[in-house]
Length: 194
Image 1 (tube, helix red, strand yellow):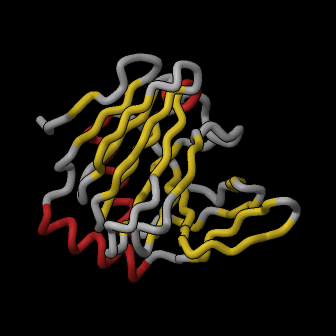
Image 2: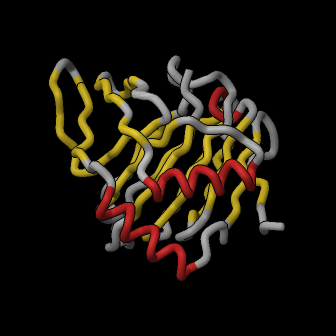
């Protein structure tokens, strides 16, 4: 049985499995993800202008799903062998099903992700989202949308964060920027698309 921590007091569930991937396996996965993923600079549209971010992303799925966030549409590529292996392991351990994966590459701590919820129309409502972390350990923050309760946690290398139930409807989450982190982090969020 994997070690797990329950993070949210109410309104959804967030479970952290801090040692989901062991260190020897972690390093090999990190290198393979870094080398074999189809990385593209993340783009956002703000005030009608398309901006290119330093952070890179890659989008994969069982089908060529269209995924739009920050007003930019992406089409999923077929799963790579390493992504399929990781997806199968996450599904086996959590009992959840996923059909897509969004990868993020943060080069250092000054690249982050602002407050948001993964509740786009293209995602099956209240479906689970499983987030795997590789590389740098980073802080992660939940903020309740009504009460403004804040929960801070650290996501270590090899950890799995499983968010389900009303989590996306009731809580925001973010990956804050930090000057203390100088090494890269890869994050995979497995999702269930419509």
